[in-house]
Image (cartoon, rainbow, N blue to C red):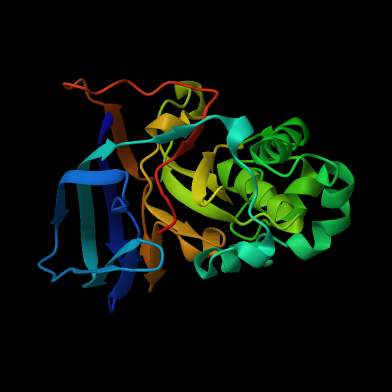
Length: 287
């Protein structure tokens, strides 16, 4: 077991006449990710609406805020009980046998144009064993061709743009890897959390995008940017791409500074510290 404590503070100055906001900053509940304690503080006297999407386990906070300052603070302690498997024992699932819940993740999406990468993906990866090692090969291919460079992409940057430019941030690495997986019929989805274990030289602790791939009837974790330690990831949201799981969607006019985020692994009985491992990791059995 790994025990993670995290904190998020989001600050906004809201222009008249006010605005509606949707947040995806709550830790998801899965069979192997347990939220043992959490808190939510909102500076305005608002009634929060928290909804869980049963299909994804994503949790959404909705607020209707008045003009003026707004601060949203979320904190949680989360226990991670990873399923750990040997990569050479994990095979792909034929499309004909994929469960309905995984099917939507083999199609192209706004930022992951897998249909336009089919020929490339087949040429590069079509000859490889259809299992975990092929997904590893896709991740390594992306890492060789894309450099982690801040301020080289924006909210319009897609997998095709990242492939062309050869630079991006975690979001861009994830989109390209997802598109290539889908191009060879492997379900892959965009996941969000916090960049546990990232080098401080990259900047303050921040939200993080990574990839979950459906293999052997489970969703396995991959971090194509390589900037963080996957064993310390607490999942907030999953979707087809970044369009589905923005940490904040704002309907109105606001100004805001960068988020303030903290994350740490706790020393506790029967708990271990996150480390980089060669085995396959999963916190979602897909049920």
